[in-house]
Length: 390
Image 1 (cartoon, one colour):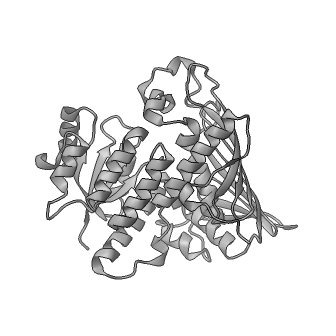
Image 2 (tube, rainbow, N blue to C red):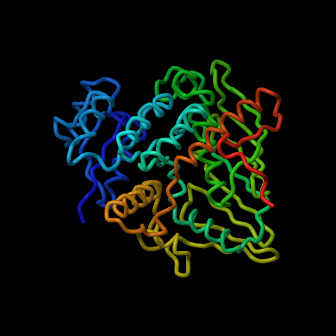
């Protein structure tokens, strides 16, 4: 099977997320990395791209040069990943979608709701795929949770408690570290810091597992380190459009917490518990019953979990495989479109531009709610306003 042509914008040498994307895109052999504009410094970006094996004529100084170079090539890109600071996502993503090139954009997709609405409309008009990298939904047991909820194992979902907390930005002496400074700078990050960085991962996971979306929310933001313009801790209560309540906490000053992405789902018939640090185990407790530990790779799991599982039970799978599942889903859909056939239905789990739009609307609502003392605020994008479900 011929590999797809893949390129990357951002994620240069020293980047935290760049190597992750390069490993994940290569993991299943679906893609060749053939083009890149990898650094804000053109010379550094070109040099690094060539060290990665990209030909000199496709090692670009910036994304505009890359767009010009790629849009009319007979072997042009099938997919480009955008891994630049938040404030640049909109212009880059829109430009490549307009050129008919599929995009996987790091989250948040944009920094304003208006930009996000335009990305959704642009993707619909051009027919190009726009995906957003909420990669944690690629874990097999997260997909199994969604399947269990969908088939009614939990009955009606009453409550979801989800958090994404870490303590790696807790040292005030690190305020000028460039790897974290931009996350609290409105010029680069937008109107929200920690909630836009990590909290929307947690909110998207709650939406993904429950198949419900945020209707309205009430938020409390705090900058625990006073020099920060944007928040480094947030507590958000969410009312979902299917009636479920979500309690969400996200923090970057939670000393002792290591990448604490955890979710608990409580329904009429039972509850589920999953933690990203122990991703190969899902705890299921039926009402009045004993807790069962569901192991990734075990028999009798859902088709969604089986498709996302790569190695036998007992051998750890982690974030790289979860993110690679997003790339594999996209590869299947891109190839199916090229071949004129329906894609594998199980490949439809990648987060879309519409998911990105809902996240941006939730960010804006949370900022507004916090500024008004935690007042309940509509979290729906203007284009998705609709009557409550019956």
